[in-house]
Image (cartoon, rainbow, N blue to C red; front, side):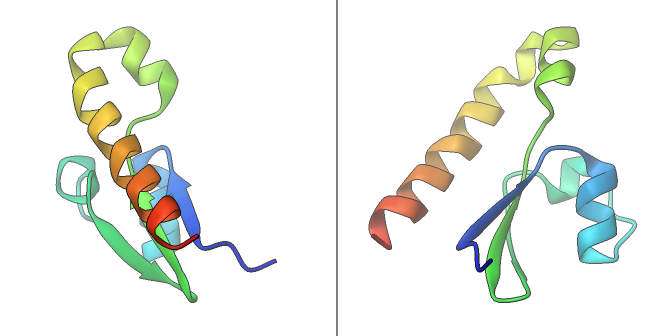
Length: 73
C-alpha cells in the first residue's frame, strides 16, 4: 500500500517509525516524511480521556490532516 498520510497516535509508535527519542511534546503537531508518506504525530484517544485539556491540540492536528488530504485530492 502507499498511504499519503500516516497518523501515529502515541509517542512509542512515533519514536519507532522515526527512529528518534524525542518527547511527545516535541513530535506532536508536526509533519515528518516517512517512506514517501507524510507522518503526523498526535495524542491517543485514551490519553484524551485522562487529560481532556489536550483535545484542542488533537483537534488542531486532525484539521492539519484534513487540510493535507483534501488539498492533495
